[in-house]
Image 1 (cartoon, helix red, strand yellow):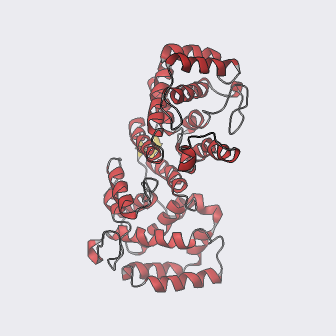
Image 2: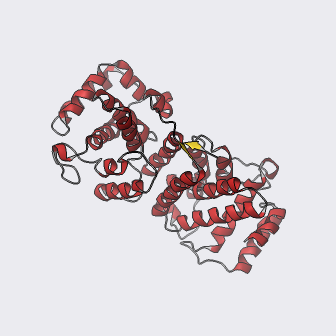
Image 3: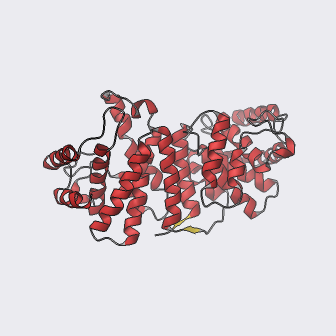
Length: 382
């Protein structure tokens, strides 16, 4: 199993927008603006690729903290551990700096990496216009020009001049405001990256994003890592090859990535969830699918990860898929999820004893929720 570096990063950037509760295309829109400015300033292809990925990943630590300085530091540290080209970690470290020294680290002028200040400008622009710019018209254009005038004393003059040049092309803002192109932004930037990631490199990214989930909910990373290990071992016990075992491991790490859409108050609630809160938390598997299905080569991972709350009798969520329409490994992942959830501590209870865990799982099997034959295998595998 291999996937393109571009496809993986582009797809996972959607999770960052969900986590930040932005306009669900903030990372892509920031990258779109940044790359066009970079090209206007004469960046070479390596610099453009570095700028592009830094823009897509600039909010990687936003769910950790909304305090901007710490968000920059955490993001830089996370990105330094990933197999990425260039100095992306340093660019993200300073992506809230402005030429006038009013950024979070107080850097001025040449002290700021140029790519960092480009992303600062592009991100600020999208924060201002991204949520309301649903169509391009003269009123929006005039508002953009007024905003740009106010920004001239904040940002490097070369960045302002480059953006003014871009505004001369109607297509620039037309593409930016066209909702149909929001999730195809890379085609508007002519990004050329043929690097392919192997399963071990993909796993590094998956562990990073599991850590992002952990920062939102203290028990989730243990949950995701536990499921990943159980899923891998379960696949091995069933006789699947090493690649399939690694695929299940990655799916386990990412199965709850859609929980980045769920508020912390709901995830940490000690009492029974209300109908509204249950509806909100049930959406997480839907968003897990929407994030992962954007990634090339993740077809099997999508199914293993996103269907872990479906049930044999078709009463699960979010698609009500009956057992006969799920693969053996999808049904195995559902068992892994239940087992791991019952054996770990949660905000509202301590971990359960092995006898109690299997008693509950047996009850779910009798009610038609889990695959009886695979539950028997799980008792051996775990």
